[in-house]
Image (cartoon, rainbow, N blue to C red; front, top):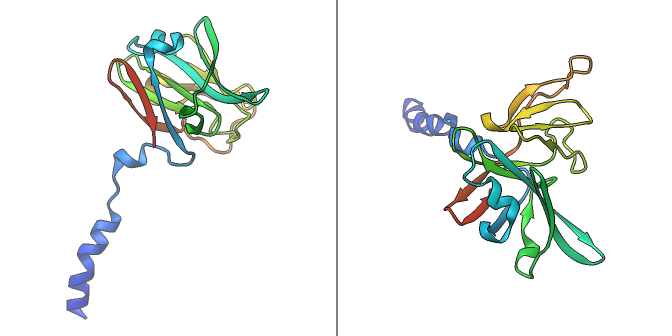
Length: 177
């Protein structure tokens, strides 16, 4: 029995350990997209500019797959090419940008409290995302934590924004999970 315990103990230790880096990011919805920043004015405006964020969402208009990008003062519909049509944009779309701490971040555009694709957040110019349905506001500069809740109707579930991995090399944005 002691030999069995001796063999199982290291396995239990390994199973009990968690990798904080992987638990920080969501695998709930498929995310994979790649955009050249110089081709999209909204991404050009926010990437590398601390405290700025843009939303990206995919939709179909008259049989044509498009992506809408919005940032402060700018909103544009772009046609997706054949290779880009299979990109995954999470539950409700993506939020990408650079925090006040100069960290490149990517979140899901849907409210994690409401947890529905049609409950998209509204982005403000000061780094906050707000859900009109549940009244929750999230701080995108602080890794998507809850900033403010509706005191009259507090949410049952309290969680920050779904976060995805992102790479930005100065010219290309690549979000994935």
